[in-house]
Structures are given as structure tokens and as C-alpha cells.
Image 1 (tube, one colour):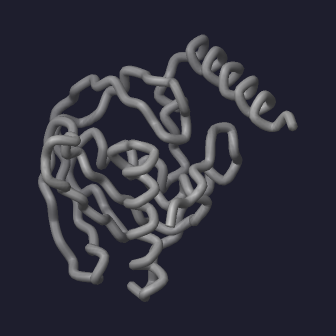
Image 2 (cartoon, rainbow, N blue to C red):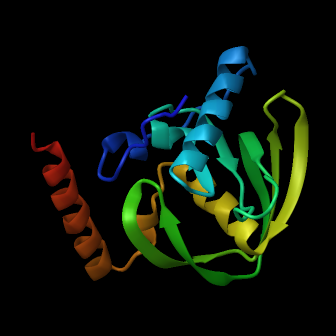
Length: 170
């Protein structure tokens, strides 16, 4: 099922996600629906908070269209190591038509559970590391706009408020 992606400045995007206590069929369905929503958008990552569910779950698939899926579901993720620094141009499904250069670690190591509840550890670098850090930020209520300078923040905020007002008109 395709879920509704919240757009900035929706206050639900600032909610801190709570740990998933038990991997139930409902949590698995949420992860599946999030993946379907992400692919339909289209995007490379989606956090549960972006669809109004304040749980520590996100999905990432950085495969290009001509490559097989490399979908990874992260439940209760914890970034346990960060190394280096890189700047990457990021977009976000909650910030339509906005991109920004963001500084992130080059390499991360993350521990999480998959959609069956099995624990795993993943080391990632480059684009995958960026995607993981971006979605992980969402779980803590940290948004792309928080990585922008004051003037850019103001410009993006105004642009998205105008878009919201326009979309709200009958």
C-alpha cells in the first residue's frame, strides 16, 4: 500500500521515533508499505516518521533502475561508528524539489534488525552511508533543513510554505 509522505513543515517530521518493541506482522507490513511508497515516489530511502509513524524503522535501496533491488530494512538502527567526512548533494521526499550539499561521514557501521527481527551489522560507505545517515537523522527529528545555513533555511522554508498553501487550495 502506498502511504502518504509528510512534507515539511509538518510538525510530525520533528517527532523522535520510539524503538520497535516487537517485530509483528504489522511492523513487517509497515516496512513493506514504506518500501513500496519509496519506490513509487521515487526515492532511495524512507523513514517511518516521514509517513507519520513515530517508530525507529527505515528502508534504503540505492540500486539504480537498471540494477536489481538492494533493499535493506533497518529496525531499531544504531550507528555505532562514523569515519571521515564527505559532502554529498542530498534530496528528501519530505522536501520536494529541494536539494542541498550536506556533510556526512564517509563510512558508517550500523547495527539493526531486519524485517524478520534478525539482528545484523552493516558497514557502508559512499552513497549508502549517506542514505543511512539521512534516514537515521529522520528518526531523531533532524531534517535536511537543519544542515543548511540561515539564509538557505529561510529560502527553503518560504518555498515549501508557499507550496503547502498552494496545494491546500481547493
